[in-house]
Length: 247
Ligand SMILES: C[S@@+](CC[C@H](N)C(=O)[O-])C[C@H]1O[C@@H](n2cnc3c(N)ncnc32)[C@H](O)[C@@H]1O
Image (cartoon, rainbow, N blue to C red; front, side, top):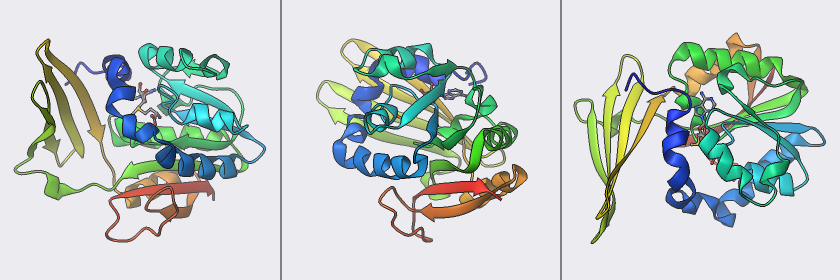
């Protein structure tokens, strides 16, 4: 998947993103996220890296927080603009690794594994460094990501069923490169109208590697939970919500 760029995922996904992830828009999912983010933003501004269709930014803005965003995909941002309140959120188009915005924020956040959309370790370190340069004194950088699980793969591959209905199927194909810590995936969505392909390229990192990237950027871990309800992070956690601050 050498031909993928920062906008490939969003441009392909925009039409179906909210439908496929309908469960993630549910108030019981979004509510605890907004509680955490609003508390961290306080009276300051918040910046979402990979703002997408506004799943989180819109309810956060509705809570009274000034929210800005960065995204590479015009198609995803067009979906955000089409929603009530979507026009009022300033979005900078570009690669979020560069954090291409003016000024500082009390909160910069990157939910839903989106940090792993950056293609390699170097780009992820660059992102941490640029985030640090845009944080207020006392500001927070929040990362939500999965904990890598090598048992998902059998000899570097995984094929799994998603939707299995009479007239609708989805199949996920993953190819794992353990040396580069990358997974090249294609989600196939099959209906009587044909097959659509949604490519996703992920460069994963363990929480400990993210902590090291933070140190390189002059940040340190303030808290880590296993979810947005602030449950403790343990060896059994499959995901984490990590908050970094200036060291
Ligand atoms: C999984 S979606 C998450 C959207 C939103 N944050 C949410 O939680 O629903 C990832 C978003 O990041 C954007 N994205 C991926 N890589 C990017 C990059 N390098 N620079 C800017 N945006 C990027 C995609 O276009 C997409 O909108």
